[in-house]
Amino acid sequence: MNDTILSLDRKYVWHPFTQEQTSPPPIVAIGGEFAKIFTQDGRELVDMISSWWVNLHGHCNKVIANAIAKQASILEQVIFADFTHQPAVMLATKLAHLLPKDLSRVFYSDNGSTAVEVALKIALQYFSNSGDYSRNHLIAFDGGYHGDTVGAMSLGKSSGYFRAWENLLFSVEMVPYPATWINDDAIAEKEEASLVALSKALDVNKVAAVIIEPLIQGAGGMRMCRPEFLKNVAKLVHDAGALLVFDEVMTGFGRTGALFACLKSAVVPDIICLSKGLTGGFLPMGATVIKESIYQAFLGDNLHHAFLHGHSYTANPLGCVAGLASLDLLLSKDCQFRISNIETICRNRIKALLDSRKILNLRLTGTVVAFDLRDNITAERFRKMFLDNGFLIRPLGSVIYFIPPYCIDQYDLNRAWDILEEILGLRNCI
Image 1 (cartoon, rainbow, N blue to C red):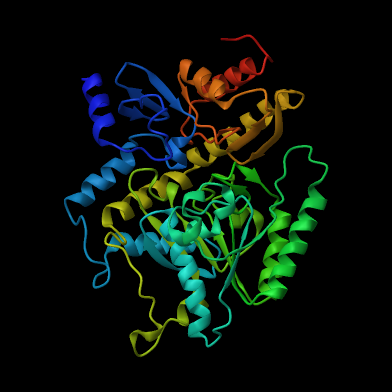
Image 2: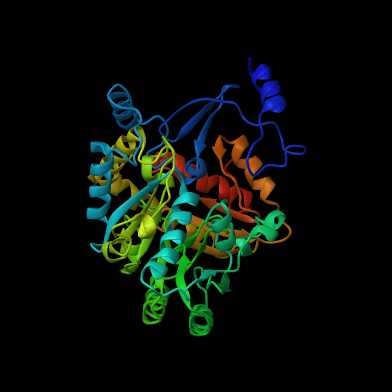
């Protein structure tokens, strides 16, 4: 059966972010439970990357699964342009109550990239609706990644993922990102250089919006910045009359140690983009949450000022109940303790790596830990060693990182650190 699945996969399936000609055969997953994935060849793999950062509570969580099953027998889908329904209303209400109070209007989409596209279109139309047609420039940060649709790619063009489509991308001003790490002696200088560049870009252009992944740049290499930097960015952006957009597709829902990075940094953006952990990893869904004052600029007597954007599965009821169930789990005392415990374990274990000459730029924010490999060590060695010992990681180029589901067993998390130390020659445990 396994050979049949793989042969059919090779014949009919095209995998994402993969060179199909040279990549090894994909692993056939047949199930999952908590932090583990079960494979066709009998292995149990501890998912140290939360399956692309979406599985907050692990695989096949019964609470979320039961909520979806119950809703599926009530209402599975309805056109959201003409209807509303309780799951969508309750999820929007809950998000608004958890986010800073000014962020209160929720526009649903179906993934992180579309949540960002919605934010861009809202920001640009907001100013034209307000009569300021000159504010049509956008600013993003070097190394950022915001998704794979054209607008999102334009914002993330410096990430290196989109060279094949450079002729499609529109102009976005890029400013330096002050990537920082533990014992970084140049934090102040890097932040100052970034803020000077941002200030200059805001002075030269009539900017509609500035977008940033707060505290952690995800796919760009788990690069991190300080809350203090975000506060200074917010002041510059708002003093210039532009909108500040936080792309919290990855950082939302506890990843930074707080419910949202905007709360941890004490910064209120004008627009926030959410996805990934929104449904606990069960169903595709995105949400763009906007300040009420921005929403008001789209009201009028005709469609001219309306936001004419939508998706077939906007506010899908199954996704909404998954989101509600996931939030209930996230807010529980048990989950909050587990998030804190993951950070504590990682913060304690990372100390052993500080003097290693094989890695660079150790960094940690919340439940996310990362480092860069020096040139003489390959990421593939790390991936294979972890896989051989029952752990799934997926390096980002030369960056190794952990971002486990919150339900990970303490033993498994420490075991992952043991393997890491063994690869780096810091212990002999395998």
